Structures are given as C-alpha cells and as structure tokens.
Image (tube, rainbow, N blue to C red; front, side, top):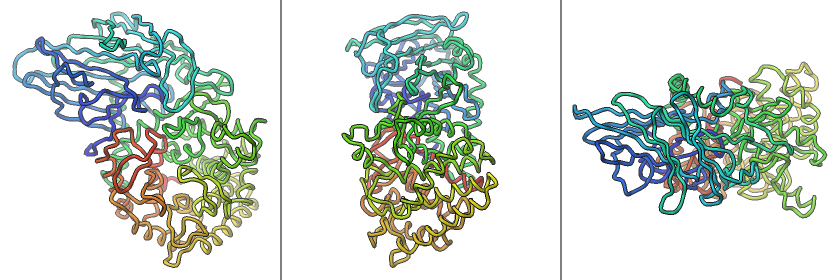
Length: 634
C-alpha cells in the first residue's frame, strides 16, 4: 500500500479489543486503543545478547530499524533489519463476513520470523509484554489477577483481568473494557512471566527463542464472558454458539493459523482487485484500509432466542449503540458482503420501536449506549417529552430504515425480512409523505451542523424512502399500491427540482437559501435503483456544480463550512458520469489520509483545507466508501 495510514491496524476484533499504531514506525509511539488511550504492547528482539525494540516506545532499548510496512485489508506486515538479521512481523484477524464464527471469535494473530543476513548464525529471541491497560478502562483502576493456563500440550497462555469483574457495569464512548480476561499465548516452550514497570503498572510477558526461517505464532485473545446487555438481559458473543471455551477456541485458532493467513491474504487481494478494477489504485487502497475498522466497531452476538444481533458502536461521536444513521452510511459494505449482518443491525431498532417505551410515529435513532442496548439514549437528558422530540431525527431515520429495507430486499431478491415489519414500514412511509417534502426545523444525520429547516438533502431522503417502500411492495406482488407510492415520490421529486434550484442550475442546501450548495448524497439511490425520479440533467448538473467546490482535500459537505464527511464524499462522487470523473473526488480523499497529522483510525469528519480531523474516528460509516460497487448489483 502506497497510502500512509493515519493509524495502522494491529489487533482488530471489536470496539473494546482494538489496538493500533499511531505512527509510521511500529517503535515510534506506544500502541493505543482506537480511542487514543495507551494499550501498550512492547516487542523486543534479542540478537546475540543485545536487545532491540521493534514495537512500542520504551526508549531504554535501541531500535532495530524498520525497513518496510505494508497494510492490506486484513494483514499488517512489518520488516525490520540490522547488520545481522531481518525480522518479519505480521498482524491479522480473520474478520470474514462469510464466516460469522471467526468474525466473532475474539482471537487475533501475530506471526514472527527472522533470517540471518550476514551468513552467520545468530542467537535470537523475541519478548512480548502487554500492559494491564488492555483489560482496564485506565491503568490502576483496579487490581488485576494473573495466572497461567494451558491451551494445548506444550503451549500455555498467560491470563490477565480485573479483580472486581463488574461485567457490563459501564457504558459510554471514551471507554475501555474493565471486565473479562485477556490472554497472551506465545509459542511452545516460551518463558511466561509478569512484572510491574516504574509506574507500578502490571505487564504480562512471554519470551521465546527463535530459529532462523521458522515461523512463530502468537495469539492475543479476549474473553469478555458477556458482550452486551440487550433489553435488560446479558447476552454472549456469537462465537459461543459453537460450544467452545476460550481456551478451546484458542487451540483451534492456533491449529489453523496458516489457513487463516492464506484466507486473509485472499480476501485482501480480492478487495484490492475489485477496487482497482472499479476506480483505480487509490480507491482500492482507501477501501482496503477501511475494512478492519468497519468490522471492529461492531459486536456480533446472539440472543437467548437465537436471534443474531450485530451492534455498532458510534465511535467518538457519542457512543450510541445500533444507531440508524450510522448503519445507513455503513450499509454498502454489508449489502455487498453479507446482508445477515445488516439485518442484525436493524432487528434491535424494530424491537425497540415496538415497545411501549417508544411513543413516536417515526423511527428511533438508536437503542442505547454501547454496550448497553436497552433503549434510545440520544436526547435522553431532555426534561420533557416535547424537548425530547426536538432532539430526534424523524425524517432522517424513517428514510434510512425504508431505504435500507429496500436495499436488503433487492440484494436478497426477496422480501422475507421486510415482510416481518410491514406495519412499521407503513407507519414510517406515511410519516415521510406527511412531513418529508419540506422538512421542518430538525436534525439530520449531520447533526454536528445543528438543526435546519427546509433541508434539501433531507427531503431527498424522504423521497427515496417512499420510492424504496414502493420497490418492496412491487416485489411483494402489490403492483397497484407500489405504483401509488412511486407516483407520490415522483410528484415530490418534481416539486423538489423547482424549489431547490439555484439560478446557475445547481441545487441548494435549503429550499429557502438561494446560492447555497450541499452534497446531495441521498439522491444516489435514484441512479442505482433506476427509478428515474429525477432527470439525468439534475444529476449531471449537480455533479458538475460539485466539482467547482472541491478543495485540496475534498469537497466540503456544504456551503457553511470547509469540513467534509468521507462517506458522503464518496456517495456524492457516484453521481459522476465515468470512473475518471469519480476519481476527481477520490484523489483528494486519498491525499487527506496520506498526509493528515491526525494519527487516528480513519476519521470521517475532517477539514478539506488542512486534512485535520474535526471529530469522529474509527467509525463504521467508512463502510459507505464501498458504495461504488453497489451500482452493479442493485
């Protein structure tokens, strides 16, 4: 990958078990949790009695020089070299969308191999040390327990966890796990130990001798015991459905480590190839970098009734769980690779909407704050019901749900999932018909910009939501009803064109704000669905006007500020008439990630003049970067 990642994925399992390097060299900075809090893993290679660090920033050790780094969708690889040896280190997690067990299994791999480079045999060993930060919200919050457990004959792991074990006792955004147990599993015949550093922080450690050219597997695993509180019940991660203990799952993972690496490489190659064929190398690299982040911001679990739920964490925007307007932008990825995961995101929304607690006739925004999924938290501090209502996104979420359900039906080629929820979909489409043509003062998914009335892009969402409902009805064989709703959508679209038009042929941010502009990303479905609600002139005129507003690092979200959103930028780029035109939007996005001083997992909200993060990181919305591929399958 030529793209310099703003942060490099190392261990990427779920919102709690997620470790990154925020630097170009693995030894330049301490490794961190995606939130930016330190999660130190220290790597030392000893060559003929001399210690060198290759991972972490413990400056009492000199470095073995990093010679290369490469990142693909599922594998991160480093090469280190001195005058005696080369050291190769690989990190990978088998996040396969077609294998829900391994997608959920909380085990991540590291492979180590060295070669002699000077023709002389050398005595080499590797030592890894992991801090208590990996199992506490903050180091020192609680005492930790440490013990050695057997994984298989000749192979032991060291286990570390908080003493209190307050399972699912906290929820929030800038938060790390403080229950369950971390496992470091080194190769056979390793020396396992623990120690405290100068600041009294606990570390577990493993050291093993290496032979030249031999590959050594290290496992990092985390058993959270219970993963989510789901409507007042504690539920487990999906991997438990196989009936294995964490030790048995680790044993299995060890035995298939090479098989998992081969598949990781194949999936990575296929994604890169698909991206390159679609829109060039830069697009291929952007979507490759996003892959692990998208999946590792979710938790796959199963209810007591055996229903699959796939809960997103709204990372560093407020920590909400199962947020509809986060699911919506992330959905292209899951429509491409497994609609069952997308359904698992929507089931909690339908369940909560059916409850007595949700009193509105529009769709909810979320179902909790991760990892507690008991009911909506957005706006929960409101003192009155009326105040609570003003903090909702009624047109936004109704439109999102209807568009998502239509897309699932089209990809699945059946309406089985929609059939379960037609009463709710019917209620939401009626809401859009009543309130969506010219939305009142309210929030949309871009809530950081504040409330706005007469939002043209929000009106587009309502129009496409109604069209999506028509598509579902048509697939159900209800042609007459389908035609009725499509006509409503068409009439609203015709009205939209007249009211949103600027004098130069472009279209406004708000109906009452002439001369303004904004990304009309919601209109992309008219192109992909071939619903022809808008004439080709509208789409081409909007695209040409967008091109006039591209800054050095991309097109701003709208005329109010210089910031943009990466997901909406790529959706807007899909209005382009050709792949070459599409790349006009992709190249500045690639440049932004390549040079940004914001060394965080891919931000989706940044300044188009400086490339600096405004807010948000590690969000699942980067699944929206994959939208270009949907044009060929919907």
